[in-house]
Length: 291
Image (cartoon, rainbow, N blue to C red; front, top):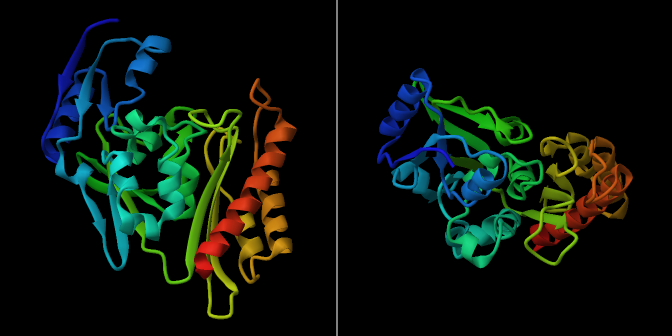
């Protein structure tokens, strides 16, 4: 390993200033939210010198607001803390279940939804669940704050839209209306602590007659980024989220998928599996919307 420096700014302004100065001076930086992948990455693919910028002491990255109109989840809040929040689990059960899939119990004490998103893996479990819940990234930089829809944040494998002098403060999520349910499912070869072969997040909203008035579907591990699938959502809207509607949504997900063949599965296999996951997650989301 080369030379490393460590900084722990205590405010958004200090963090942005540090990143901006480092960028202008040609100094590489890496932000720590949870930091659970840093040593793995250094020992496997990239051990070049850098300054590690720990954002966990910034109040905004630790803020959790559950309001009547919206929810804000700070980028550095550990998944374990979210998993223990009964109110959040009741409002966004699918998202919290996705967060709970990130690593072991020990990892959960550090791993964060924000870190999972910024790691920008095509197989990041929380990303399809965030897409299903219309999450928006709140980003701070030298010119103030900007917002980016989650489905537009990740731009490639391990790549995202953050500039070198920007940080993700957290995620803003509209509070689901009554009779809304969400769910996330993934398929892995092992029983736990593995990377998804495919994943699907679904959110549905019902009216008083049980008709679907709104839906969102996100899929992961079947393209270079997680995908929003509006065709799958359209298949659900206007229906009772019955078998035929779920089958149509599944087909839309399979058609939208652009996977590769590797040791974890073939193109054909992944396309099939992501459709099945959409159908099953949709059925769970329906149950939650009714209850």
